[in-house]
Structure formats: structure tokens, C-alpha cells
Image (cartoon, rainbow, N blue to C red; front, side):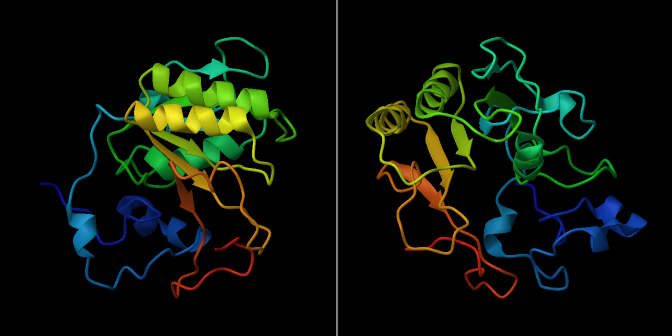
Length: 212
């Protein structure tokens, strides 16, 4: 199997040597030996990651070649262009092109990216679009559904969409929130979602992350 370079968690090795390393957060110290879980694989192009968010900048040089057709639930069309920037940022973390001296290195070097736009210019959405975005993503081939968003209301339609995606064999990954509270946030709190909080470089919960 392929191995991960020891400094690949945030930046391309070439980009780091070009002086970009100091411009981003160090997720782990590159002087540490590679962790065993990082030696598994660089990913697979058969995997589609749906970024259910504000869309993706389809012209971004670190993403353009990996984007598959998506949908825009804000404007109800097939052009999920990012007018906010958040979705493009998330897509880069998930699967930016790697070892090209541009920007960051994605966690999955090979995966393709599906933009599903449910957040508008201001980052706002509604529960119907969240649920519809989840259903659209897994029924159109996404095996990983990323929702870096959430709210504190338990909405039946969203829960049913998460459950359906899980039953279809897709992994739903959702953010727990950034309010430093233990209050459950949805869809992260659903049984069939994979909830993600934030830790700092010392592997301690950050001052802003939700928990519990």
C-alpha cells in the first residue's frame, strides 16, 4: 500500500518547502514518526465525497480536476458555485489535489468531490434543503457525506435522510458545533452520523468546540 509523507496532514511537502507551512495550522509535528493509521492508503478515485455546504469553486486549481456533477438547492439548478467560500475550504481539507505545490493536501488524495449547495451567500439554509441535499448526495453515488454545519433542532426529515444514507451504505460525517457547549447538535447527534469535534495540537478539546 502507499504511505503518507510525514508532513502531509495540512500542506503539500513541496508547498511546505516553498514557505507556505507557516501560513497554516500545524495539525501535527512533522518531526514525529508517521502514525500507523497514516500508512494505510492515499485513497481511491472510486470514492465520491459529497461536500454538502455552500458549494465549491469549480475553477479552484487544487479542486477543479476532482469535481463531479453536483446540485444547487439554493438556486435549484445544476451549478453549485460557491458564493460563500466555506464549502471550497472544506473540500480542500477533504480531498485537495496533492503534491502539486498548490495550497493544501487533501486527506484523501484520490477521492472525487461532489458539490451539493445548501448554504447561501450568508451561510444560511433550511432543514428541507439539508435533508434534500443528503438524499441527493447518496442517491447520486456519494459514499461519504460531509456536513460541516448543524443546528440544535432535532428535525425528523433530516434524521430520516441520515438514516436512509446509512442504510444505503454511505457514511454521514457532521460537525458537532463551535459554541463550547454540551448541547447536542444535529445531524451530528443522530445515531447513524459520525460526529466530529475539534482538538488542538496537544490533542485536547479546543476552547470553542462542542463536546459530549
